Image: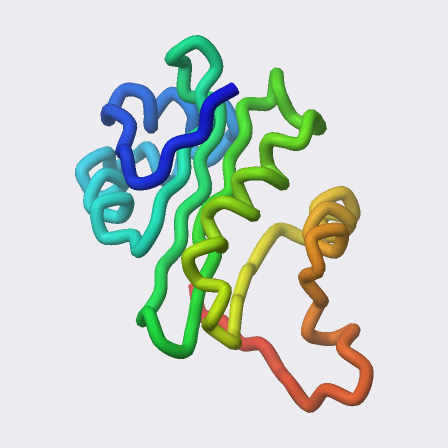
Amino acid sequence: MTYASNVLPSLGELLHLYDAVGWSAYTEDPARLLRSLNGSAHVVCARVDEELVGLARIVSDFGTLVYVQDVLVDPRLQRRGIGAELIRSVLEPFDDIRQTVLLTDDDPALAAFYTSLSFTEASAAAGSSLRAFFRI
């Protein structure tokens, strides 16, 4: 397993990985997907024998906010620590930024995964007056 920062995969590799995890909304417009990756603040890819098997990417203003946009691991290799290493690696350059934001599906396994990496659900933060809003 190798991890590489800011070495973007080919469009074909991206489409294959996003389709493998069921994120077909991203693959309907390949040019937009490629633009999104090119506009990311940081991208980390995981490979096994040159095959793209994971990707995480960050959107940031480089001063106050880091947003974890995508974390994908090929379903054949999930639950082997790849996602955790992708998160650690993609966030490392932003250790000095106070606010890290992540949105994910309402899935207990995903909640457990992100909680294990020190993320806290906004609604579960004791004494927090934080609210999360989004528009789709």
